[in-house]
Image (cartoon, rainbow, N blue to C red):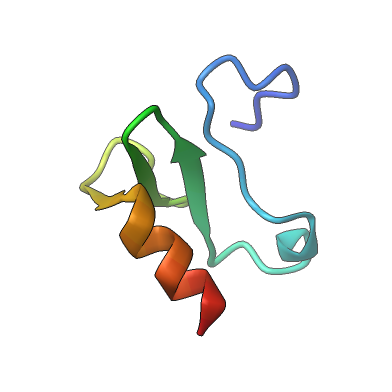
Length: 58
């Protein structure tokens, strides 16, 4: 379910509107968390902030 107020901190790209198979991310103080948008209660990956920044630069 989409949370328009974003109380949970999770969000997905606006470009994923036509594609339901995507990931959601949220930023915490120390990490970036990633999960499957179709299974929000499922497993989650957590990346240190520096590792996420390096990933985005590639």
